[in-house]
Image (cartoon, rainbow, N blue to C red):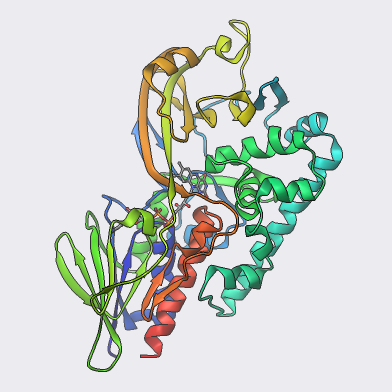
Length: 449
Ligand SMILES: Cc1cc2nc3c(=O)[nH]c(=O)nc-3n(C[C@H](O)[C@H](O)[C@H](O)COP(=O)(O)OP(=O)(O)OC[C@H]3O[C@@H](n4cnc5c(N)ncnc54)[C@H](O)[C@@H]3O)c2cc1C
């Protein structure tokens, strides 16, 4: 049987699921080459060795209701671990920080968090948000039955309509919750701090993204985990299992489609190490970050490029200074801080992420959107700092306002875009869904050849 040649650009969640789906649908009738600019697969699911341990610095928390993620766990035989490591005792507590101080203090369980929140906002607003998130999550999980039945989507709008979720991307999470009579305390002091932690953006996020953020915090059931040995290993191992040819440290700089003698399109990819031809291409890297040129018969392809948001991840081994948080020296502090806009802090979230066996101290992870956490700033937040690691995500997530006209999954015949859905909502599983769709579309295009 003649074999189709397909290139997948990007070995993150979207690219891996596209490759897995191509293998499922076309079996050995397809040769899959994955080009990855980085030194390993994983993309924004990434970890670093720091202070004697391994810490996730990108996509960290995975969700048990994410079917594609769980399928990758099965395919690779990966084991589940906790998303913080090596800490003990009472540290998984959450405090919500506003201009009025810590308005919600919760223990380490969901019921305790729920109780703490209800005390601050009243039962009705808390219930309305929970019900809304559960409704959105239920609609969203409808995607699996559609994908199992072989349904594909040419555009994110089509996918959203099929799931009954179009309205949610047309309105901000703040306006949507106001419309549902959720009070300002719930929105400003609880919802926004939680979505800050997920997206480093606030109430202006489209409502679907906001509610995905809340579901990611556990409001929609299921449980949260990370992969033992690092989330990114899920992708490298899955690509090895399906026998994709993975070209690491290889950036694609140009994707050029040219009409061939059969009237179809042949795709030529230019990389740092030469050029190769393919029958189909899945672009599974965000257009805003991929730094590549797209042409069709010599003319640049016209596609909207939506901006992505910079995020600084700072890891700190040390002891927090209670005084910075308006508390007396020696006061107990929580494991995690959710930060409201009104607290006017230079960071969006701060929490324990592990324990350093080298320093015998906790490791904190801080997310700050535009601002770098300077040594001077850290010296105010911490009473002692033993080690620091800084990582700048040039684009952590798309900027996610309401009402965007998303880029289609099909950019041209034989060229699909695995990250198209990310301007509606982004997370490891959401990108897996988009990548799976792009892989299915690519396989369908090849079967028609
Ligand atoms: C700080 C941070 C925290 C997060 N926390 C969570 C979380 O807790 N839970 C969650 O579910 N999600 C989280 N996310 C989001 C999640 O990580 C992403 O949505 C998801 O990993 C994106 O997958 P992707 O495949 O679409 O893109 P990416 O993971 O970005 O993959 C694209 C790949 O393409 C490669 N590439 C780019 N351009 C080229 C090129 N020209 N040639 C070759 N290769 C190229 C890149 O190197 C990259 O490996 C977080 C993200 C960040 C940054």
